[in-house]
Image (tube, rainbow, N blue to C red):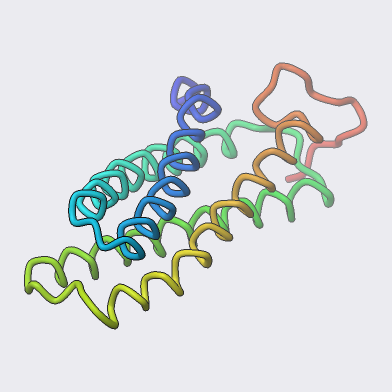
Length: 155
């Protein structure tokens, strides 16, 4: 499973970029009432969710194989997982709701404005996920060849 863990740093940037980009494209499509832009946003959301699941799969493997956890790094990893899960569930929920509304031809009016209000929440979740993930890697060496001597092994 180390192969999957090694892919995490490469895959993780796709959902970050796609979900944030989706939010801006959706915003643009709603404000300027461009149907093509709205459909494009939907496609970007679908691809972003797909890569989110890949990132979660590889990220869980990366956390499993890391051997240098301590009282400082464990809360950072837990926050990273929390916000990653919130991001996936939040955007998956938006995808499901949006799909149902589009199929029923009800993605208009108030629903679009509800999405406008919700989009910053999703972007915040993605931002927090990246912040904690970056801290794990850059500050504590998780996922790198460097294993700082100051970290002790925790059972």
